[in-house]
Amino acid sequence: MAGPRASVAAHEVLAVIFQVRQQRLSVLLWRRARPPYEGAWVLPGGRLGATEGLDESIRRQLAQKVDVRDLTHLEQLETRGDPERHPADRTLATSYLGLVPADTDPATPEDTAWHPAPDPPPMGFDHAAIMRAGRRRLRAKLSYTNIGFALAPREFTMSELSGYYRAALGHDVAATNLRRVLLRRGQIEETGESVPSGRSGGRPAALFRFRARELEITDAFAVLRPPSRE
Amino acid sequence: MAGPRASVAAHEVLAVIFQVRQQRLSVLLWRRARPPYEGAWVLPGGRLGATEGLDESIRRQLAQKVDVRDLTHLEQLETRGDPERHPADRTLATSYLGLVPADTDPATPEDTAWHPAPDPPPMGFDHAAIMRAGRRRLRAKLSYTNIGFALAPREFTMSELSGYYRAALGHDVAATNLRRVLLRRGQIEETGESVPSGRSGGRPAALFRFRARELEITDAFAVLRPPSRE
DNA sequence: ACCAGTTTTCGCCTGTAAGGCTAAAACCGT
DNA sequence: ACGGTTTTAGCCTTACAGGCGAAAACTGGT
Image (cartoon, rainbow over all chains, first blue to last red; front, side):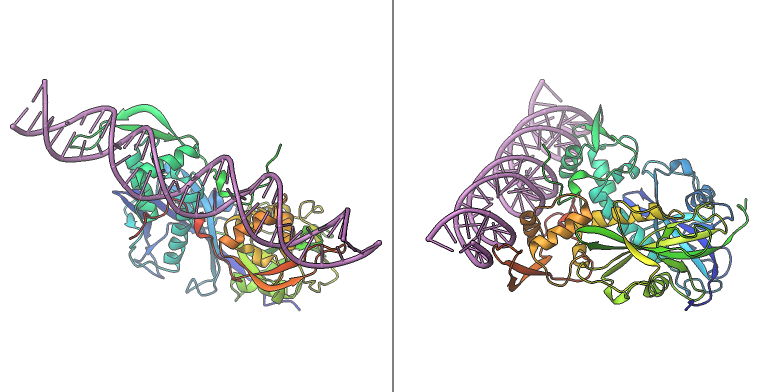
């Protein structure tokens, strides 16, 4: 009753790294140097080392592409294992979602570049589908977690923040509503300082910061709560 | 700059199968027949076949433990790859969350049994942690999706349904509130029929069914919506 | 110094969803 | 018919999302 012959497959880790650059959600891609898909854009990553954990491995691979200290968030996304996803050898891939805050410009090697996430170049393997899964995950978590902290710099104005949300969500976000929602949830707070606004005048904008810099799930999100406790 | 020697690791798939049995959330476990962890309870699953996809593999493995037709939901959960998670060989594991509706009693082999999920027996490997991840996922999705359809039989009364939710969530759920929430969301509808209630009288309960039997995400869950379209 | 233009911020209002509570409805057995 | 039991419907409160307009706070030009 044993199934098909058990396989011993290669395993790779990949990362979907997003950053908002010039008002657009961008993804870090790497130009592949060898066949198959030589010259195509792919997600950064590589083979799992013999003694590495998965998290450990993706951090090591990324260290060759971006300054890992700029990574404000990293979480596992999904694992793909279709026998045909890699034309040559059988290779499973575990992907991660990573975020870089909007103000930093990490040094990247020559074979690596940022591309617009809504309209990426043709990508090798099944990496385009993995990137879409990353976008979906990011969009969903912007609603019910404080994950915005990972897209925004340490301090920001509300109009800047709404710009990051707009880029990531793909639709307009009213700064006034965003402010209320995040303040009520206790995700952000005023720093007390303010900065002059745009080139042609305008009221100076107050600076805000996220209170936490780790992922937290919004309470209100859990519906069907336990009955009121007394 | 090449990392550690690339590994070619074994890969297994595991499933966290939940069912509400006698008002309690239960998990299907399997008594392991060989070392390591011989005799310990583990999650059902096994080695990935050489030509199988991951989804395909977990369905094949499960077919040996439960009638797969009883599975109303199955989704990928997470992948673990700590080098120490398997004492002998390096083995990665991709886990799935599966659900069986409350009224069925699938035939299971002798080495397989249902155990209370809140208070499981000692389990081998890292399977206890995987099971907890499955519970967290289930609890979260009960809030913002229609995943209840996979826990409940085709037709049910509201007090039965609130029992399934209570077991899965681990706290009381008011039947009257649950009814309103699910009706407003359009997740459930009345069948028109009703059944006599408990042993000692009482108003007969209306029967309900879920309108969809596939996972759908509740709209209201996405906060920070696009501005009103006209 | 004042005014027009700009951007941010505040306040008021609306709609909708969650959830508590009570009364009514609909049955059973005696 | 009446008390016990369970389900269902209605009413109310609270909380959050989001629209809109007015006020605040600045810049630059006249």
